[in-house]
Length: 190
Image (cartoon, rainbow, N blue to C red; front, top):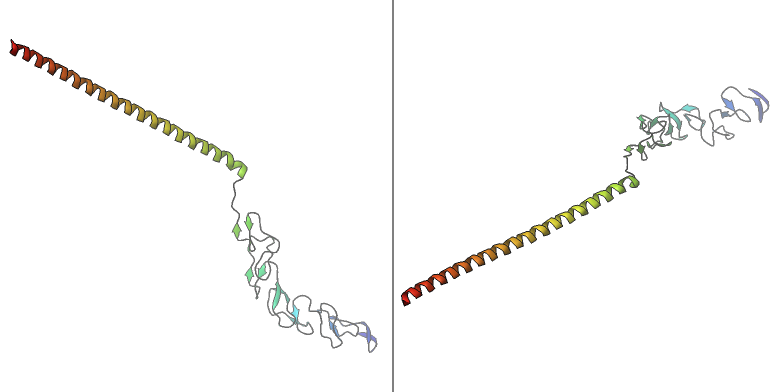
């Protein structure tokens, strides 16, 4: 360390910086006169002087005061950086809660990329099919109605024909019976 006066140094020992070499190089920005880091720590360090490594192995950035991990190594998440991001995340990169930060792999959706995208049918492809089935259904109903009408008309005609044949048969029988009575009456009268 080389200092010109008590308030200014031109070079510091390795790992220290600042006007009088009071700041640890792990301080994010400047530090106060007392050497305490005022704006957080770089990398995986914490403490007032950013001189203590984060206690969590896979933690990249931890809270300066309490050492809580705020950023895990890529592909991991959770307060202890011990859970893997979904393999359907792009990267796979996720935040501390497991939400995918760079989107989902093709075919997946959702915050965690757990939902598989199902192939939706395009309306332009389904409309002709729906129209064709509807037309076919209407034609079948009309055909059934026509066949039912023909059946009922034929049945009615057959019934009328049988009634007419029965009436004619009864009339012929009555005429023959009347004719027989006339013959008997004539014979008796003679």
